[in-house]
Amino acid sequence: MTLTEFQMLIYGIGIGAQGMAALDMIGSMRGARRGRTEAETARKQTAGDLFHSSFRLYQLQQRSRA
Image (cartoon, rainbow, N blue to C red; front, side):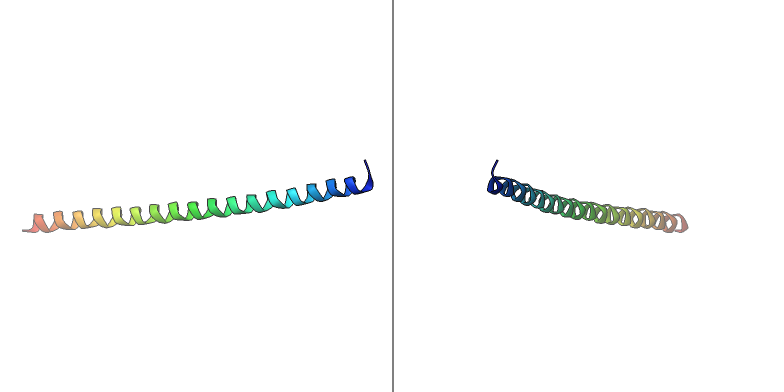
């Protein structure tokens, strides 16, 4: 293997490693965004359920007073 071929091999390995690191970073960012969206959806669902159950309890209490 000549010196030029050896240098090209080293450069190729370096560029490939940087490319894989960039792709991994993009995948991690997408996963984090997806996780935040799921957490926000779950939080809104929980808040809605809490409101609904509180409102239902309020309605039942008002009905029993009448």
